[in-house]
Length: 86
Image (tube, rainbow, N blue to C red):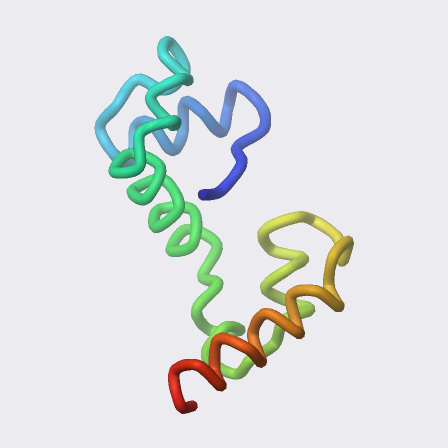
């Protein structure tokens, strides 16, 4: 759900969720573990403060480090909010 890059991230987020992702990175292919890592990543980077205000640019930068795909994310956010009646 969140693509981790680098051994240090596998170690860090593995420690946070209690799995040795550095030794067994394929654990991230399991939905439950992937969801735990995504949540830990989101929380560690304090992304909610920007997501709560629909700051798609800040959220994208915190997750990807840049703004590649930004326009698509804006469209997806609008669709999701419309579908949820928000």
